[in-house]
Image (cartoon, rainbow, N blue to C red; front, top):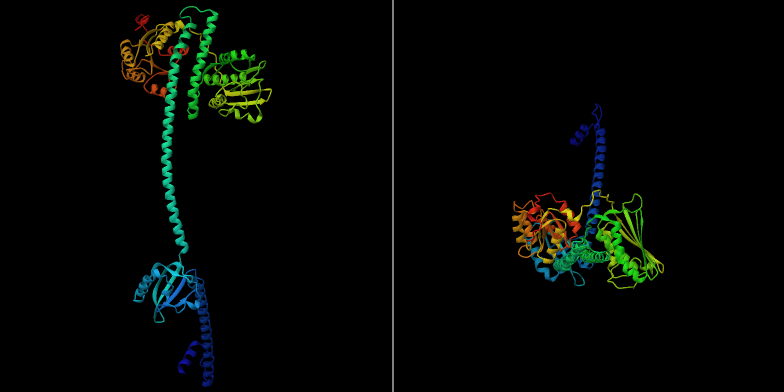
Length: 583
């Protein structure tokens, strides 16, 4: 009692006042005691409520956990949450009190018993392993079990967390299957890649073979054609005596037909280049009036035989322009030839060359009054082996296809308009920059090379003789060599002003001979112009790489050759040394 009174006094609840008796003090103590009890009751209630709340929380967590939770005591299941019961597929009352091992798949029971014995023997380290339960239908349920051993209420208890890994194992199986399939696909891809490389190699070999074949065909055709055109040019220049008007007209027809054949040979190579994407235009100064006149002469005879009228009309186009003349001539000859072919007797074919003021492009419109083409077939005529329903005459059906492709290479377009029964019109539009007229007077051919010493290396006797005659007629002194080794020897001995070097010769080829001349200080300064019947870009590159100063394709037009020779740096010319000499 005295301690309680002391506590009350110390708490300041009452103050000792003289004259107050024992009953009053007791009353105060009772009041304080009741207050403390009430406080304790409130604290107990709050703690009980907190414990109940935590218990509800824990129960909710355990009950709703996505993994199974099992407590095992003495090998029997003391607790199992809803997920654990769901995994074995039986009622909850048939789980509690049962041994855990009876729900384990028979194939895994030995390992689970061993693990449980180790835990019950004092091993409290956490564990994790993969095993399998068996559900009520007898089907295995793959699980991952993890947990630890602990003391609960003085009893060693095994806490086990059970996770269904069916989906994971299925995903892993799918992943392995996907990896297997991917590996199989990779093997097939590697095989396909190897096959593609093999096909590409074969295609490249085929392209090389085709290029070699075309080059050989070009060589075989150009070699005799060079002689024909060269001799025709000599006859026209009256190198062998005067020719009358009829003879000149016949020779001009031979020359133009020969050059058209030469263009056709070039077209074969161009088609190969078009297919490989390696065709590039080679613009040069061109007289459009002359070019169009040549094109019209090609159709003059068939037009005359059919009774078809032809005409050319000029509308503001310049006379001289920069363009690839061979490509342009090929397109126009093709368009004009088709126009005559599909125009009946009494009809007409016209070529209109026009240019708008301030425009750098020129329009070449070829129109006819022929059978025409239907709207549906108009675009199809530019496809290979199509004629838009027109069947007059013969042909392989590649003309318009190549013409449009050449127009694209020239940076232009080729469009068609037609009305069935009334005729067709094809318009070629290409950029053609004008070229100012050259005020320099023409130099007579027989004086332009006067005194120039030229070494001609050519193994073909007819070609060598033709070049010799042409050059001598132009006033040059000529020395001949029949192979590359002879050319090198004579160049070192004679020091000519220029060497015309055929590329393909026996004993030593022209490229090897050119390299030998350029590698010798004695002849390094002598200009070398390589001549070849092969019109491939690779040949030009090989010649220039060997040191050649220029490159010409046979048959060489004498006017172009003379112009190149005149532009060479002036050398030591001694006409008296070689004029009239032939070796």
